Amino acid sequence: MRIFVTGTAGFVGFHLARLLLAEGHDVAGYDGMTDYYDVRLKERRHAMLRQSPGFSATEAMLEDAAALNAAVAGFEPDVIVHLAAQAGVRYSLENPRAYIDSNVVGTLNVMEAARAVGVKHLLMASTSSVYGAGEEMPFDERQKADTQLTIYAATKKANEAMGHAWAHIHALPVTMFRFFTVYGPWGRPDMALFKFTKGILERTPIDIYNHGEMWRDFTYVDDLVRGIRLLIDAVPGGPETAVEGDSLSPAAPFRVVNIGNSEKVRLMDFIDAIEQEIGRKAIRNMMPMQLGDVPATWADASLLQNLTGYRPQTPFREGVRRFVEWYRDYYNI
Ligand SMILES: NC(=O)c1ccc[n+]([C@@H]2O[C@H](COP(=O)([O-])OP(=O)(O)OC[C@H]3O[C@@H](n4cnc5c(N)ncnc54)[C@H](O)[C@@H]3O)[C@@H](O)[C@H]2O)c1
Image 1 (cartoon, protein in one colour):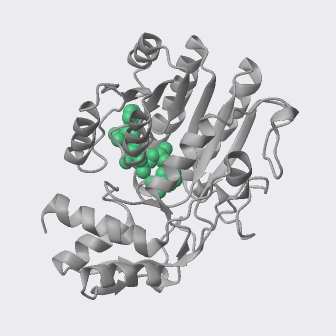
Image 2 (tube, helix red, strand yellow):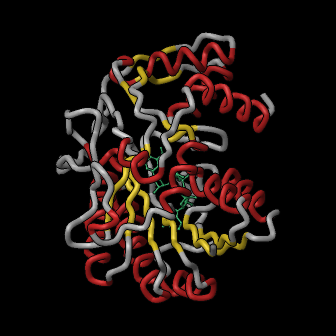
């Protein structure tokens, strides 16, 4: 297959591209190398992908519609997986405009480029943050999700609505993933596991929000990209493509799918796993709840399983072990 992936210098895009290349597919990457976090990490990821002959990349912004159209048209992909975005819940309090530009304008440009070449399937990243203040857990794709708490979550909910309308108008299949707290090697420096590992190794305090009363459905990155890979083949269509518990739209070839571990882990247990792996206690700085944050996330992953036969399953202690091993090797610490 020929697969166009946006965000290939990013955490998830890098892992997905690696998996697709290992399976022998041709992958065209697209990434603006934004400076939201250390650009060297993005350059290293892209450099690793470039070692594979099946990989090519364009470094440009999604907002640059001409560059994006040219890259997509030149590659003629069968499928597009759109992962590039301004991510991060907390940064959206500081710089909401970056989210509108990258996630709303950028996503429209991806959809238009996809339409111009008539892809067989467009898959795009949403987030568990769209469940917002919802308290009915585990989160199921069919439940109402209208209470987003940040502009980040609002832009991803907008992407879902845009994807639905686009699938309806052009009769082109769209799958939206709702990812749940992804972690693992080559991870993002703005996320908790990265910050905690860095703090413990450097003996600096780590900020623990809501005094540790937090639960997350941590999803190991290899499991996540395996789920994405299998969903590429689960193309939404008419009612005959529906499975049990499906979120398939009655009005468009469109569905939303959670990709989560379906296990609610207490943040303090997660920190304990990092401390055990490193062999040192963290200096804990207990903090109040952050604005826009939610105390818990927990995925119902039955739809993913019904569509693909697959369910993420890496235990968090194993995933943490692999992350810490990577971190120490990468930063030589
Ligand atoms: N990692 C998670 O826990 C998580 C959870 C839920 C959803 N998501 C979503 O998954 C996707 C991938 O996230 P990630 O963790 O790999 O993030 P990431 O920040 O590591 O990767 C995103 C990539 O997109 C690029 N990018 C950002 N804005 C761009 C723009 N306007 N034009 C071109 N490139 C741009 C960045 O340079 C970066 O390399 C995102 O859509 C994110 O919102 C991630």
